[in-house]
Image (cartoon, rainbow, N blue to C red; front, side, top):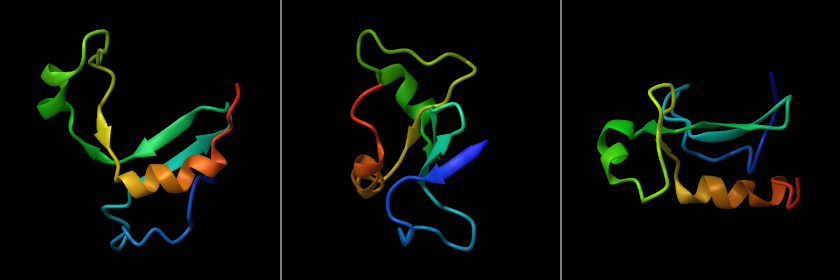
Length: 77
């Protein structure tokens, strides 16, 4: 299911298996994000044209996690 972690291996955010924000590449080329579920507080504030179905969640990850992963994310499809 998971191929690899994106970004730095030592992010320093993980506390014994909890509070471990991360970005993971899946076998099919999609990405999975581990972060804090902010759906209930954010869903009513989404910009026009955005939506969140009952099967989806809005997650927050620290900026440094995404910036560290940038070099591992392909620039093209």
